[in-house]
Length: 469
Image (cartoon, rainbow, N blue to C red; front, side, top):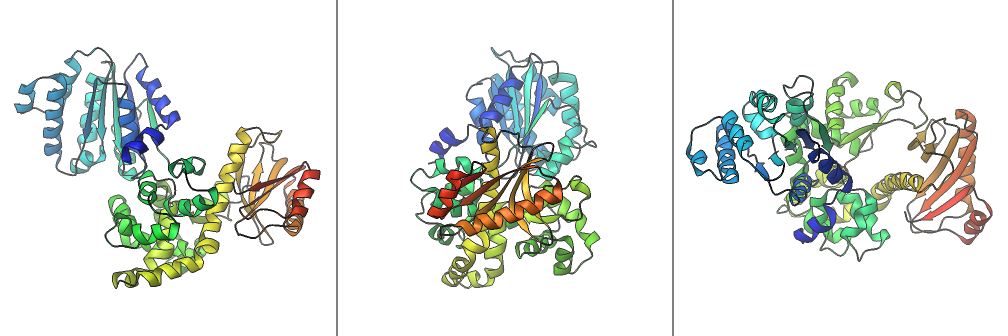
């Protein structure tokens, strides 16, 4: 199964193309690849190396810098065919000098995976790599790739202005999760209706998706892969946060508050019992880690200054775990799995999956824009809310005068003309308030549409119905 996954899904075409462009540069290239754990960074790099055999791939460990240097030296000795190097007591500079001096038919690729572990062991190591790059690698026609899973450490050690390596990399890739539009390739026998709840749990993290591949329905998957203490997913959020932050308990409390439905800064602060100003650092870190985002109405002209910001968990598994697993850990520890599973079933679709469905639909708007579904160019897609109303989808062009406005309905029931009439009323209010002169309407529904609504869509060129996504 893992081999099939590598063949079908690791070809992040854009990322592989970017790596090839860097490789084909006549000068040395230095690429930073980073992103949260389990998203497929290592598999991406190994796929890239299939076309470049003159390469040295090294996976760092959490051991000391000295032990990592010994391991790297051994692999370098094998790469250049010099067993004496493996026995020598040499520093990093000498090892890289031997690699550079080794003749190869093609450009050499050097990858240090989980780079941050060496820098964590020895804070001076980024300075060591800076010297090696400046004095040896940048003029040697090689490709250096530093890869890491701990986003905070990769930023501080490689990307931040304060890092000795700052400004030296020729390119960077922050690997993201797989979008829903590719999700069905993991489950060729499942319908879109079946895929949505699976995606609501696993998100686009390949490792999580693979764990769910052999389960027939989502609740069996949750029971077998999440609620059992033997599964790595049982305590995955703890593992992720322990690697990235020092105050795990504070972050747990904060994420739990958001998962419980507290999205305004004031509400989050009230829930956790601290001042709003005390949360800024924690929320900023969670945003940097791609776990949380600050969302504002898409019509806001200055989002960073908006007072309407709401915080939401953007990692599906983290959101699911904190909403349905973390509050019931005591029951799970006592073996009351069935009780917890029933609690999950009672609120899963309407209180959780329905919101993920909205995210999927907004993602679909971008795909439809690329397909030129509308005769104006979409510049931004998001939500809208004020004291009077909410809209699931508002997509605007650069001028803000043309808009696609829509609703996402996740239920088994067909949607009728009442949904359209409500949407039309909201769209008129928004247009008047924001100066929108042209409006296109769209309704997503996984339960389908009534014949009356279908007939209306057939007569109205400004109305589009999408069943499913």
